[in-house]
Amino acid sequence: MIRLGDIAHGRSGDKGNHANIGVIAYTSEGHAFIQRMLTAESVKAYFRSLAADKVERFDLPRLFAFNFVLWNALGGGASDSLRTDTQGKALATALLEMELPDPANLAAMLPPPPRFPRPGSGQPPHRHDSTSRNPED
Amino acid sequence: MPSSGIPDSIRIGNGAGFWGDNLDAPIRLAEQGALDFLTLEYLAELTLSILAHQRRLNPEAGYVADFPATVSRLIPILKAQPGLRIVTNAGGLNPEACAREVGRLLAAEGMGGEKIAWVSGDDLMPRLGELRSAGERFAHFDSGEFLKHFETEPIEADHFQADGLGGLVSANVYLGAQPICNALDQGARIVITGRVADASLTVGPAMHAFRWSWTDWRKLAAASAAGHLIECGAQVTGGLLSRWQTVPDYAHIGYPIAILDARGGCRITKPEGSGGIVNRETVTEQLLYELGDPARYHTPDVTLDFTSADVTEIGPDLVEITGVRGVPPPATLKVSCAYGNGYAAKGDLVVSGRDASDKAKATGEMILDRVGQAGFPLRRKYLEVLGSGATLPGVPPGGAELREVVLRISVWDKDKHAVERFCRELSPVITSGPPGISGYAGTRPKPRPVLSYWPTVIDRRKVKPVVHLGTAESIGASGTPRASREEKP
Image (tube, rainbow over all chains, first blue to last red; front, side, top):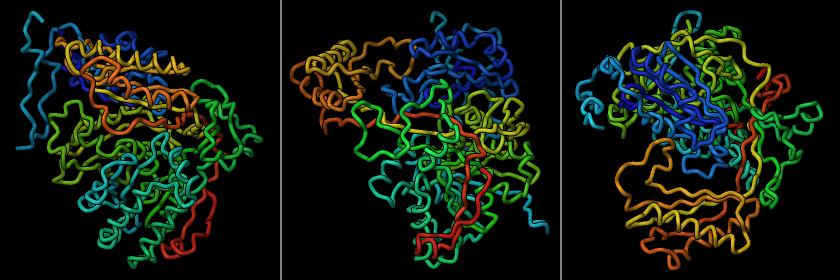
């Protein structure tokens, strides 16, 4: 299994009582894989504890991106919500932990090296935990 | 600059993404950014309801006081950079008082001749009766419900009623870029608004500089996209980035600069030498931030379609956004309302030892049981065991047994007494509950009035922004700057 976060990055936030999660594949290969694996239904099932009314997926293929809108998922929103994460800030982090089956061409889905690397800028060499995991996991 | 007076490009930096953002950021950005315009965005969805409360206690309050404090520190930079102008929504619910304070500060530093503008017309509270008579129903954006307990008069500070329907606290329409552009056209060095669409803080300066048509939807879309990308400050320069380990020098993170050109080009960068990073990842994540349907992102100025957009790295910390489509905006403008809705409180305890999660849950339940025994079955209550993944829905718990967690209990009720009783019930569990509970030092939690959010819309023809303009000296001294003319929103 891989984590969604191995092949995509993301960000989440709120609009009133609704949350949105942007998911962006690092490569076009990853985008095609996510398009099949990460449906509105699978995201709704993953977040069933939020009891969203509905989950919608919007596609931005030119950006290798998807926008998931989780309707009425924030327990009332910023002021009314009794949760710690009143604004859904951690939802992208949570979704990137989703496990997906191993794709055939994982290497083509991993983050490419920086286009404009900066010497001494602290860009660490890429490390992919998924490829070094114990196969029994 | 060509002879027409229209520049090839302008640099707009945003030095604040919310009320409470880093106080040094706007100073550093203005010093290092080679800016034409500095924008400062302070108003989240419910910020105005907090400012409404402050204004009721003090008629000269109700704006973001961080802004005049920032202006004080910017004065030497404003003197050294005569072309630098500031656009902000710091006016909140009282842009006039904010302008007066800023006028006094400038006049005291020998800048009394500078022009300041403030924009009114977003605050709908004084007009509710008139608007309701004219047929505005203020139906909820999503549910279509009508706001039944709409009050025609603002309520008093101590008037949050025990039934939880404490009446409307604030109602503000999102204005667009036109009043900002007009204020800049009239020579304002500093433009202070209340509620405007965040992106319009960027669109106003662009329209002023480039003299585009208000129906050139593609260029309006490009400027609005730039505004959307920089409105949250450092969120586009490395803040929140999933691969946070790739962000250099977070501690000195640079705030964003949009470079717009006269043909409608849009690039995002940050001051040279600052920390953080601007790349495809930071820009794409922020482009998707707080987005609904990406093909219909509404602003008062233009409706954007991001599905045709491309994001391209064209240099180190330099990203170009192209292809954003624009279509005419809806005939309605968004309105954010807030109304008093009962009371809430939360309390934390640290729970240590074997079976910490189970012990925390049992402790929380016994606290709520005791509040119930006292005659207060709280209407809403929520237990979280922080450490066990409470903020990570869907994620399976880690393998190791937790030996230390934070129990967080959060409650709500229409009745303030019920919430007060809960606040008193946390401490007793330290001696009358399981062992290993600590972290109770400090003050007992207090009930806070809940201000609920009610998003709605209004016919844009009924909205009448007004630009008020004067010199810093006249605005600071008189407090009654002359009104200029009504604007289109």
